[in-house]
Image 1 (cartoon, rainbow, N blue to C red):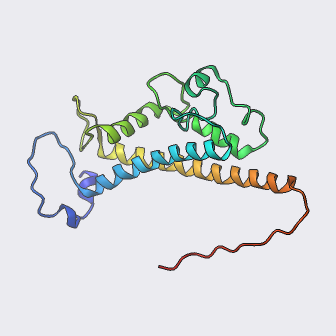
Image 2: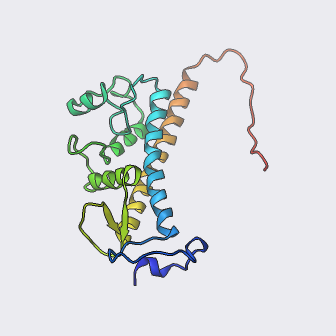
Image 3: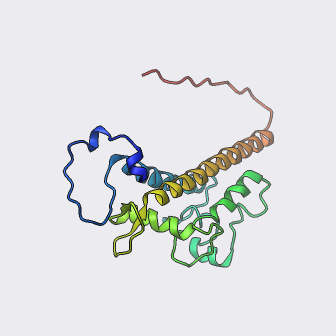
Length: 202
């Protein structure tokens, strides 16, 4: 029994007419949600890169990503290992953890070494989901159209979610450390007015 058959039919899948093309492709909202989760988790990494660029005033150009944001001249600096002075020797262990986590991802084809063995595969799935037609199949199949089995997609989505979760934890901890250092170095003159933030009721 496939993973597809283990889930109850969703309302969006009922009364949907599909032609059996004998390619064992899975079409249902369950796997559409999984594909969306994969894309969203990967996009969080791009948002982290934009945040780092703004927070540390790195002034990187538009060709940066989570993997090369740490280096001078992005891709060229990544190949040569030219770390930005902002990060070189910075005493922030969480930020260093985030830096090493970035090495688990690949954004170009075989141009840089990634620690994670499945980095290229994860990148290819993300690129296919974003820019191509991507099939989820019940079993392995070869062809021109990128595809992955149901179980493989679930496993890889869980992996990218765990990596993204770790990245957010490192980011939160590293920024807390940076803000602590800023407050510690500020002059003790004047009065700091507390500001309470309350959640909005909807």
